Image (cartoon, rainbow, N blue to C red; front, top):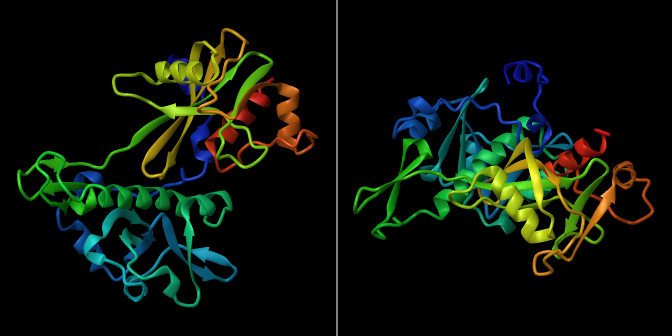
Amino acid sequence: MIFSLFDAPPLEPSQFVGFAGNRIDRQSETRGDDSAEKALADPSARLLLVTGGRICLKLNGGGFDPYHDIAESEALAARLDQAVLLGWSASGPLLAAPAGIDLELLPEGIKAIDYRSVNMQGLLDQDGLGALAQAGALMAWHASHRFCGKCGSPTEMRAGGYKRVCSGCGSEHFPRTDPVAIMLAVTPDRCVLGRSPHFAPGMYSALAGFIEPGETIENAVRREVHEESGIRLGRVVYHASQPWPFPYSLMIGCFGEALNEDLRYDSRELEDCRWFTRREVLDILAGSSTSGIFVPPRAAIAHHLIRAWAESG
């Protein structure tokens, strides 16, 4: 075990997926209730402004800039009283806040683009995407936890945005992350890919599902694959993870050893599910397949699972 740890590559696979480039120094142990207010008073403070699953981006020399100073944020009616401190970069404090402006009234040079498109189209660098994943997840959590789940009283933001306290019973509520298993069932020469009804025509991907309370990652992988495809799994190994701000998930990517090959997929979950040979997958990845089938782009962890298996043979 010790030798396999020190033999591991210096860059883990998780570093190559979208939304995973967060290098913000969170300084989580030093967050005070006034930390966001103090950060906003810093002249170097920059904010990410989000609204309705979109981020406000500045057009900047043909590219996009996700960061706004205080004056720019106020021009977009940012709700600075709801600002969350993400942490610190080399340039100063980074925060996130809701943009209060009507999206139809955005000024010249500002675009509000949904998170998924920002990721899939590569509109931001890795640092920007990582900050967006943190900001989007926190803003979504705050929007859905304005009232106490115990007594129903309003809750108030504390700890720079990393806690809400009930004004009635004093209960403390903390940001959550929902774990999702995404997995590729494989034999030495074939893998299972499925397509959901909401996928773009021709797209097949790895299977996925939420991890339930009291369940290990490995057992969740086995359960989801069997429920969706009828394939029973033996050994399960972890490969990589990906922050996924829809609204606040963590995708946990695994490979599973298929013990049978007869597919009985759940038509309520999947439109289709089939085996693919390694050669077929390599052709799909290379864009040389004549089947019309494609897999998710590089920004998605599913792509990295599929590619890692296909190129391992």
